[in-house]
Image (cartoon, rainbow, N blue to C red; front, side):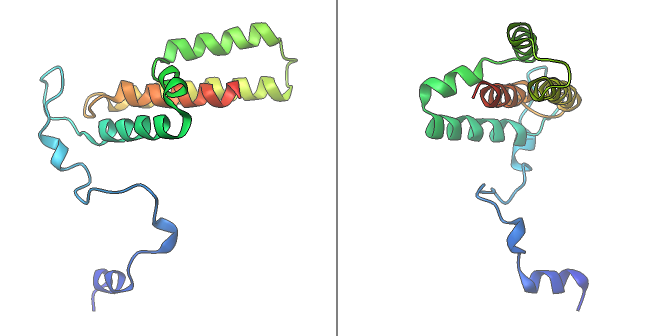
Length: 141
């Protein structure tokens, strides 16, 4: 029996299951979509995930809260962090200061990732905006 056959006979491991439904084609069906620039084919998995996250946010948070999440860009999120630091003036090394510094680091990493996948993923900026919006929501709570 081959290693692949042995793995398949046991089934999926419970810790790898998730509540997210998979299409079974892993974005391959979405390869036929052309990008806005027409520069080639782009994968639609990122776009599909962003749409699913938006729908889930609307269902769990309500339409009013979810609509405020959609309009958060990288620049808006950085401006919000800077305004929060000026408003609260946390002491250097305090918990809130550390949280805001880590939020800034998260935003930079997400922005870099967005730029890295823009060439082959559809609507990566909208997906990143969902991340910025949820991070801001967590910080506002």
